[in-house]
Length: 220
Image (cartoon, rainbow, N blue to C red; front, side, top):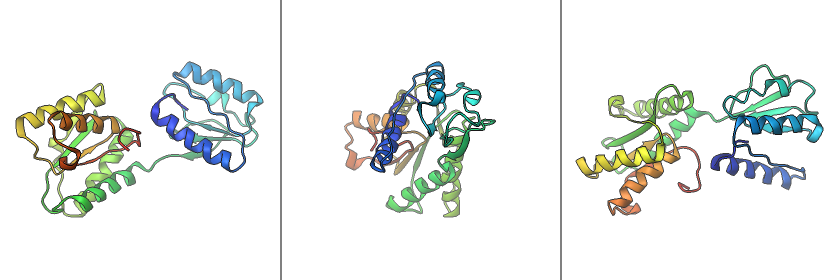
């Protein structure tokens, strides 16, 4: 798996479940594509029977994942891997459904589900997962009679946490605390939003609902 907080949390959870079922599990986390390629070459030489593999961007693992590389094949996790004979299954999130669930959560928890102010924070366009997440959110609101003004979406470039915090601080300074709920496409953005509120000495109990995606330890 990639060497980041989210991947380590997911990897540790999967390893724990498989260990409890009696399997011998080895976890490997790679910081970049070359390190991941080296791990993959070592494992395809017979070091394991089944591989659960979360490909890093630009890792190009197809050549190492041919039909006979692993006795029981490969499960591609999170990122699709094409033209690799060893890949037997894919495991991925339904991002549209995740966005729909976030909208349902907001509607269930705001004081007035027919009249509320929603803040929206996302990344620059071109990220398919984020677009699916937002579409699920938007269409669920619309199915409940709530229109979403896409021109009001705050698009954060660069460092997501710092960018969202800086923008939220500006919004609070200019407009005060006017939001009933805030949606962020990542937990990093949500962390930044929460920190901006905290710096205004607004307690968690008095903050708007903050919905985000990722499962980071800080946001949980």
